[in-house]
Length: 229
Image (cartoon, rainbow, N blue to C red; front, side, top):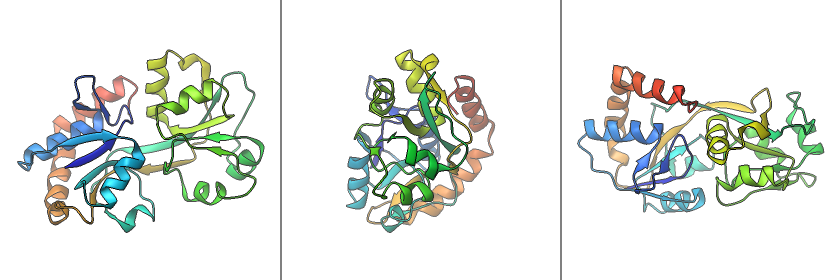
């Protein structure tokens, strides 16, 4: 059993209820090589996390490495593509980012979905009494709230932000600031209380082989052509 959340273009549920996105395609391809039958369910990230914590999900995706996740998730050696977490602001706002996150957060309010892994520095700063951080439960709410001026800047991984803004027809209303806050691999994690944990070595083996294949390279190229990598 697999838990996920809507984080296009990496993983999301299609209108027909099918697991879709680059990470989903990779997982399904590797599962087929292993003769695994998967049941993938979608919910909020917090619901997926809770179910993985309790062992109701054997696998969970996609997630970044975070010390508190490692208490209940085992990470395979093989990762998915790197993710770039970035700051996004409304075009014409005049807001800039010079690479110093603390000074940015002291001057601006931030929005991101609840429990999103951003960076170790952000985890420290968001607990400060001066930090103004909004955390809606739904990942897809963040871009809408940014446009509605509910906060000054949003944090999201760059591919998801571009995908969601295109779906909303709002790409030309938002600017992605540089430099990125954090660039790190994403993973398909194994619940330490789930039934698939003894199979993680098999998963790593087949994932390594698949990532070297023409099929995988073509899959990644297809998403890159859509601006989805």
